[in-house]
Image 1 (cartoon, rainbow over the protein chains, first blue to last red):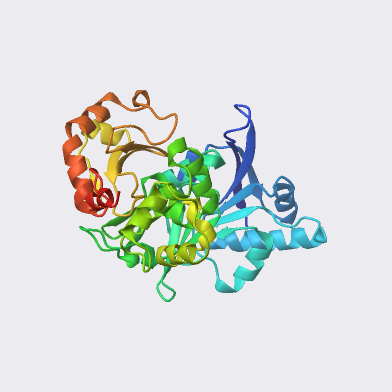
Image 2: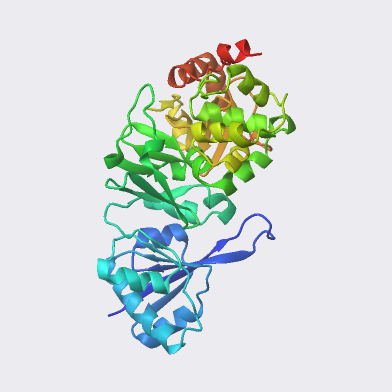
Length: 293
Length: 97
């Protein structure tokens, strides 16, 4: 059986010279639209293990493999396992793997051994439309990591797993999405839209940056670094987080609204001990996390 | 349901969108302009861009005109969606000074 693989470089972004390349995509299968959107690079026709091995030699930890069908995933896994075994574990992984069709459950342990991140493992995974998916994946990683390319809902644990454009995944509790005045979230109607800026749950829509601000301390750090000087400090963070939680200043047991107001205006120093614990508990964060918001 | 500003068909086809989502970073109140992977967050309090480096010259003039024409409506929409943090500020906050 012949497997077609298109190898395409994506331009790296900030911090690199223009025109430099770093990330390499391997599109497995003959999905002509996908290949066209990625841009045709070098094409390999894998008819046997020898040609597979030639492709694997070009992969690094910064490679991303995109398998278009379950059949292609099986072929990739078979060849990759033999390749890695022949190299006696000197190659740790072949990079990341994005599956456009969910694989057999039994193949998951092996896939997780061969690849660093495996995305699209469950049938309920919803991905961006192909053209938008390719556009995000080809973006500089600094840009792609703040966009979502897909997600899946686990109704039993009430969680939503969201994959970022750098193929890292974050998990968020569905309870985060409070009904707005005009819509109630419907997790069974998950969709990822707007080039990864929007998570849609039925008619309810969540902004990707609002989700990342809640769950990713590193994202918050980057965002806070952009703020004006007067918006830094414990008081400003407390105010932002209180508003985000939709709490009033009078909603902190044992602390007066005036005390909260003084803290937010920076008129008193950063609280410690009992006061800090009361704030953290009501805001549903760890005490040392408040200042990161 | 998000608030989506009506734009000319030509702007929509070019990928422009202007939205207030149901789930947003609430402070400060803002509207977000999207075009493909790019986004610009615009404060509904003072009309300033929230992220350094963002400016109107990066945005189609007709998108700007649509936003300016709907400025009051955008502020009203925000207040309806997020009454805890209205564009004009929270009166209760001022009482605590």
